[in-house]
Image (tube, rainbow, N blue to C red; front, side, top):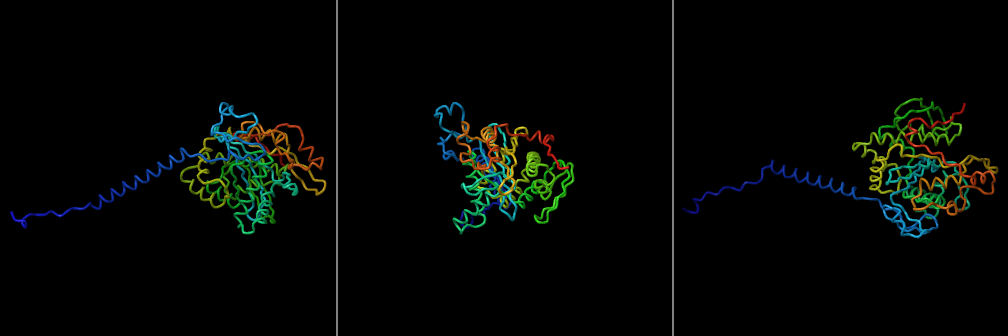
Length: 401
């Protein structure tokens, strides 16, 4: 047979359908690999925490992730060993146009027994900064912000705010002898948008709230009863104080009611579809030094906390008026606060001692007897409410007649 007579069949390529099918399989495999990688990452991921430098003048030995009595028995009695299963954060809220913080909270999360402890610090709490500046604690962020700018005039607004928060963290760490692992501060616009992002907060407003203050552009009109508060209405609730007998302390207690409802809302309604919107609002409006991966990790862990394991308290103290300026301040009860730190916020293997706690007495003016008497009063115990009890209506706030 001649070479010319041999029939040759043309080579056939893959059909478009087959190419599309292979591409789909490859893409699906990549997506599954990505999901598996993310799942493995967060399964094994754990935020890194400071175990080297204590916020007070005691040497701290780096501790293991899960400190136990047996593990701690190898250390000497005078060593403070960090338990990395407990983390503390400073959370603050400020007005969009101002730098004073009307909300300041210390939040402690124990990831071993899944308990959450919240200490609200009233904005009028007396404090001395650098032994010179005397005033309310709600001015400290602004003061630290201005101090940072004076040291470096090239700082932008965001950098100054971060410096203000970091300076406030260092002051609280040193004087309260509490390790703070991160901070977050949000303005009122961010607060409103975050509340809207989660679909509002369902709660029972206990009282009618009516108040107008054009100077602050503050208008509060809320009817009592069960309802879902949107961002603007939630702001009204947490800022209202004019009808409470105890003024700002009444507002702090009302914020406990709101925080309980917010926590319940997040536990019941947080879904995959709402997370991107919430994260978007957090990134826009919350200034924090906590990495996004850590935020996701802690959020996942927080969903395991039951309402009965959430404790809320106000910094123990009493109101007093300065004889020199006539201004009202909230003076810390030193002994009660030390007890609260050791019971709810201590990340170490032994108690903070009286000698270490607020060693410079920055939370009082010792030259003024009324302040000193409150500060050095004997311990009576901090008032602590659990979220499940608050949700059942156990927390009542006295109203003006």
